[in-house]
Length: 255
Length: 307
Image 1 (cartoon, rainbow over the protein chains, first blue to last red):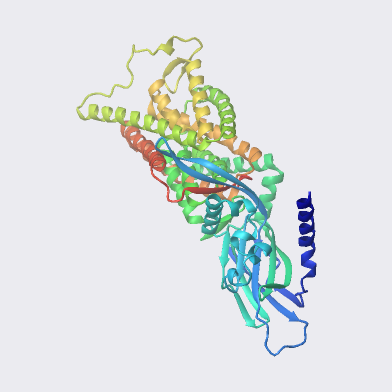
Image 2 (tube, chains in turn yellow, red):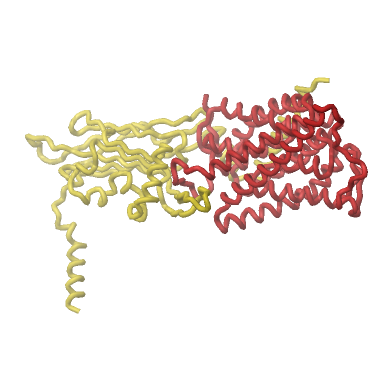
């Protein structure tokens, strides 16, 4: 009974603890993106997104300027992924075990100015979800070395997961720039961009913004028809096949 | 030169896709097979999501087969009566195949079943065709007449009722075995995600003793209708037919099919069967080697939403 009471107090204290911490957010972050809409047309092979940001320090000017660490996390629309592992059964390599990963970003980029492990305390990465593994992967992936790491590896090879530890460039001590690559295979939808600014391992400022990746023109029309007018679309493609085949037969006809 | 595929949602090299269309179209026109058993795996290899590849290939096959059907039709090498009886069985078989397909997917290991049926079926048919055509070639080398039709030899199914005379094929058989063949081809085709022409041509030649050229023309006729139906079904059921991919493949396909059909008619029937046998056997071997060797990456990641 006593033990339970003590535990309850400890829990209460832990819940209140953050409010006792000194308020570190004296800085304000102003960001600007090169675009808020990435348009996909027939010649789209991927693009890149440039982010500029300035840190505004409201404190009285110091002799020694503060040093900042930046982490930019870009998350594409969430999807459910299944990781399968092949095993040898009766001499044949077949899919055997699998793990399901719901609510996983279909695109993920983590850009920092140096390795996030050098930012400060050990728990910083887990707390603010900094770094590819921590960023958006549910705890199950972190807990599962083999399948979770395989997911990261495969997605990285596809260019859909991206991690760069020297991708944030400081133009002045308080002004920085980063380039986010958007590959041609990037899924359409809303992308959330999270910018964290740390100073001496403490969160100094944070801002969230978003961009949209959308199809435009003919691509948008095709995607819309395939989704909304399924039968007409199917009949249309079948008719197209019929016309192409018949025309070719007439053109190539030689008696 | 890249073009963005709106349904597959990725950019591809249009010349590569066009080239694939021509190459598979040529083979398709030459042998009277749909070419799905070649095209679908190749597109997946290029990086097209399997769902989009499986759904977009049928329209390419349909376009190629129309061109071929027109060409064979003019030469009176399409037995439309035989084709329609096969089609009635084929439609039932396709429905049954789709049902078994979803049943296997629920049980898991659909990939394994598909791969194993590829190996068993393709290597058996390939080997059969190679052996038979080599025999025929040897016979003709020794100056003997090829004996394809042996009057008086009757298989058991020749005793069945509902007999029809199929003029172009010069056969007089019951509609029952014809429907059963159509059913089997439709079933296996839907199950393995292919047109099934490479099953139908040997079945017509060896079981029903239809002359090779008519077998090829009639198989194209049947393939045309099943593939048009498959395109519409995939668009309605899976929404993964990519019209840009399909159109690029079609244009390449009809060009390839045209020259393929001409090449096929210039080659002796035994040689044609020998080449097709080798091709089918090679695909089976490829699938077999893939299953037997340890892959570089043991893990694969798929999106559950289908794409």
